[in-house]
Image (cartoon, rainbow, N blue to C red; front, side, top):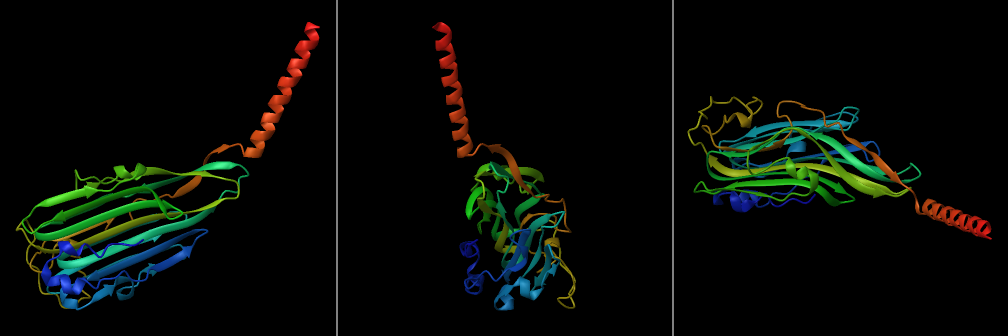
Length: 316
């Protein structure tokens, strides 16, 4: 999925030079297209670090045969980022993406579930994708420029069939805006009326799949934030001096840069794998194939002819 260049117009001129070269890096891929494939990405830039960073390289995720779990916390004198992104396509499936930045930052992370399905039932089938989405958050705190964007999207053969896409921005004068670009049943997940989304179960139709036909399903969560934010004095305080970057001080605690403002985009539990996604892609109904309909038509025609002959004989 091609993403925008981190909405650079929402970031101050002081970090534009660094962030303008930002590019999405190569994903970590686990699994296969038959049993379920997971792809994780994470990229970020902090002004003092001097260049954009591929999070998958900076702190490789833990992986199993069916999934991957990624954590990363990094900070400089100017800003910080925290990630938790994961996906597992095993017997119990989990799925989530989260990024938070404080101070001056630009960051994005994504997780994708992909799988190819073939209708082997012998009749045309309506396929349905049923899945659980964990709680979510999309917010900006503090003063200054901020941007937070969350996308959940289901695609069939590369074409979106359901989407929840919400974007929040904050101008330097404190003016806030929110916009949605939604499609289908997923549209009810996140709204501009609240910074939070409740966990919920969704059903997305994959349409009619003929005998022997295949389709590829992609389910994406993409979380993106950027900003040049300062504390608004609403509770974030100064932090003790950190001995090294190995010290785990998550950015979402606001413990950086003297209590800088922050932006968060997430769908999923930030502290661990939350509610199971329980992916289920299965046929929901069948319809007769054209050959079957033709045979049925011939049978009905024959029955009608027989009835007419019997009726004519009885009248004679």
